[in-house]
Length: 238
Ligand SMILES: [Zn+2]
Ligand SMILES: [Zn+2]
Image (cartoon, rainbow, N blue to C red; front, side, top):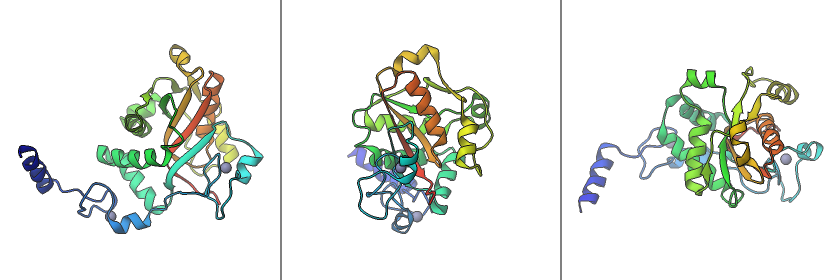
């Protein structure tokens, strides 16, 4: 009885609102209008990078066929477009734990099957100076939440960003690969944790996959058996 009264009071004082437009909704998440605008990624898609296909196919995309990524599989919840960009920016700069929970839930649901037998959830790290400036790393917040939902150990200390790199935005794929090359490392102290493990790497958005590729390369060099990339959104490079 008291619980129900408290819930009622909570709803009265803090009604659930759409995480995108702020309109009052019945339960946490998006209002029906915003829901329609998200481009959820579903099958058919590339078996490796998750790029959506227009036709039914169990093949891999041209890009993966040309050069296989270092990660084994990538899953994203939805496409990165003007609509989802808005939501992600609000999460990045809004310090909002509510956003984080929602985005993590969608991402977890999209990757649930792919990460079923994973051992560790690891966020894509940022350089400590950047972290100092920003106060937090949004990939860490997402990864922690996803680890909780999946019941998999969360381990933010394995991967580290050794050197600061210029913004990737606006760079070509090759320039991005070069930009992040050698910028990640596995902390010696925690290197044992990677051996023979299936690792879920978490980031907010993936564009060319250059950052994830570099992280996967370093993890595998340290003995990781499998690396699965999980992101909230992916940029359609078509
Ligand atoms: Zn809305
Ligand atoms: Zn692909």
